[in-house]
Image (cartoon, rainbow, N blue to C red):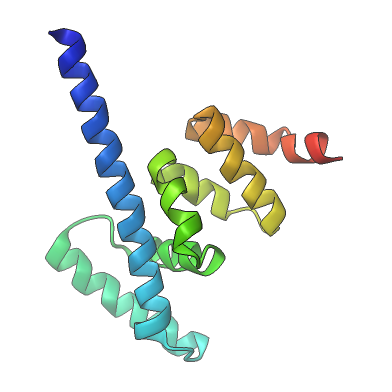
Length: 139
C-alpha cells in the first residue's frame, strides 16, 4: 500500500512541476510578445513591475517582478516549445533558474541536458557549474 501511495504522490508532484514550468515559460512568452511587444527597456521594466503587482494580488506569491523577468528570460533563451516541453517534464523551476544564469547558449544546453539526464538537484547542478564540468568535458 505504501509503495502505491508514494508512487502516486511522486507522479502527482512530477505532473505539477511540469505544468508549473510550462506555465512560467508561457507567461514569459506572453510578456515578451504581448505585454512588451519590443518596447524600450525602461517602459518594459515599469510594465513588468505593474503586472507583477497585479498578479501577486490576484494569484499569490511566485509572480514577483524578479520571477517575471526570469520567466521572460526563460522564454527568450528557449523560444521553441518543442525544446521546453521535454525539459519541463524533467527539470524543476529552480534548476531552470540556475541554468539561466549561464551566459553562453552551448553551455546552458549542456547543463540542461545533463541535469535532465542525471536528475541533479539544484545544489548538485550548482556544484557542477562551479566545478566547471562543461569546460572539463567539452575541452
